[in-house]
Image 1 (tube, rainbow, N blue to C red):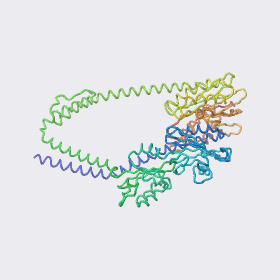
Image 2: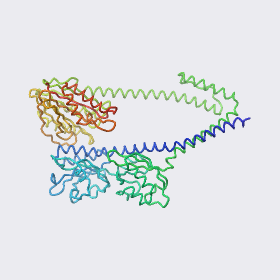
Image 3: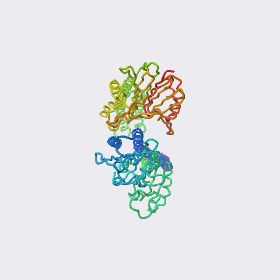
Image 4: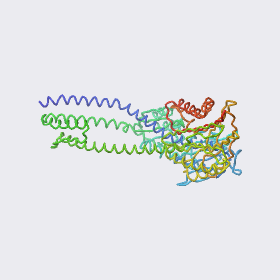
Amino acid sequence: MLLWIALPTLVIIVGVLVITIGHLRDSNASDIERESLQRASDAAARFDGAFRAASAIAATTAQAMALRPDLSESGIYSQLGANVMQSRVIFGAAMAFDPAVRTMGDDLFCPYVCRDGEGLRRLNIGRSTYDWHADPRWTWWHEPITRGRGVWSAPYFDAGAGNVTMVTFSSPFPVGDRLAGVTTVDVDLDSIRDRVGAEVLSGLSFFILTPEGRFVFSGLDDDDTGKTIMQAAQAAGHTELALAAVRMISGKPGVAVVPGFRGALPRGWEAFAETQWTFFAPMESTGWSVVALMPERVAFATANRRVRMAVIGLGAALTMIVASIVVVSGAMARPIRRLRDSARRIASGDLIARVEGVTGSDEIADLGRAFNTMTDDLEAHIDRLADERAARERLERDMHVARQIQQGLLPAEPPPIEGFDVAGWSRPADQTGGDYYDWQLLPDGRFVIVLADVTGHGLGPALVTAFCRAYTRAIFRKYDGLSESMSELNELLGTDLSDSRFITLVAAVIDSRAGEVQVLSAGHGPILHYSKATGSVDSHGAHGLPLGISPDAVFDEAQRFCLGPGDILALTTDGLFEWSRADGRMFGTDRLRESLARHAPRDSGSIIEGLVRDVEDFAGSAPQIDDVTAVIIKRAP
């Protein structure tokens, strides 16, 4: 009788087991491909972020040099040292000048700062090191000068200067109407491989390829640097890898299964002793591709574990079912009913409900004891959740208070300047931000208006804005000229800020009697000037370096604007015009000028509302990722 009861159960469970194993095998390949593509995209994004951050440092420095090409040699070395210290993957930074613009005596002028142990080393890369100006092999100089834009170099060993294998991003800067030099950052390939690759692709072999298929760095053999992957694969006799390499450099993410070597393994190709799943994805900023290798046995390990667990689980179920048939149904029913009643009590809210009379050592007794343990754990877990929720609410309240305090530092009312309509607005990307604006009455009756942007956003930059505001309120009352005020402010902030943080700040002094506005910008731009008479909007750049970068920075005299009736000066932070859509396109300064001209007939507050609305309409569903601040100064019609 027992056999006739157990046999159908056995047949059913074995059938379920066969179906489950078949389904797991069918779905496993697509699961691996999907997970591998995601991992490749994540790895490419992390590498891309590191290279993008490095290139942004060089590009920002080039913009600053376009404004101050006569920066002193000590100022250049200070700037380059600050660039190197911004990221551990940056090995060195240089600033190379065309000999027709600037030299060091009769030698080339190329100040260079690189890492030297825990410190920094300074040198000039002149002809005694290598003639980068005359020798076309040094593409880090020739490519950006020829193309007129920033470019990444191919990998190379920087003998005589950095003495490491690196890639260089070079960004040109002009003097007048000609390109006068380049600013560079060197990325140490060993460092970025160890720091970024090991973090994202821990335990996996990987390499990075250029669009031509050349190794940026290789996880196979150091001798492969400079070759294309197709050449390396063909030299190693691996035709399948050479064919898969064409897909790897296509600029699209994908997965390719590459079989292992069928013959003797070449040196450096030990990874291909077995079949590899290669997954790859492009890096947007450089056009390079990240390729990672995962042995097929590792890729299928999860699926094999699922099969084993399914077999174990169904086998255990069969054993328990057969054992349950032997147990007297009445002896089973009583403890099950007690479990049911206790579960209903818990469902009704009685979290201390327990199963009474739990004795013996059978499965039902174990289940009863586990149930009692579960109720104890459930009550403790609910208490922990309540404590965590209370802590989170306290933190949110504290952040809300911090936001209120920061917002309270912003002016509550527009300044009462006769003949001028002034409005300001700011919205941080987080609870608190690194932007602020302010205005104050000077002793001589003029008003000074300040707008500043601290690098980053969040609580740290918010604290910086607080003491920056305090400094400006004290300093701008001491001097008649903006350049003296800006110099003292730069000196104070330079002692307070870390090497990786700086402030862009623009100050405008309004003389209502003369209808004149004096403007001085420390690394902050653009400054937009709308002329009612012509209906045009002119863009003006910064007048000096950002604050906190160079302690000996010198600021020129302020730029004067004689505003006619209806003329406008617009000051904004980059969070407004760099707001991007989902496809990565930024709103940009051209659209900002068009928006300003369109809303110019309105009052200052409405102009800001119109600018923000135009940017938000352009961005669509893309979130705000940076603080946004704007100040409008309009001469009354």
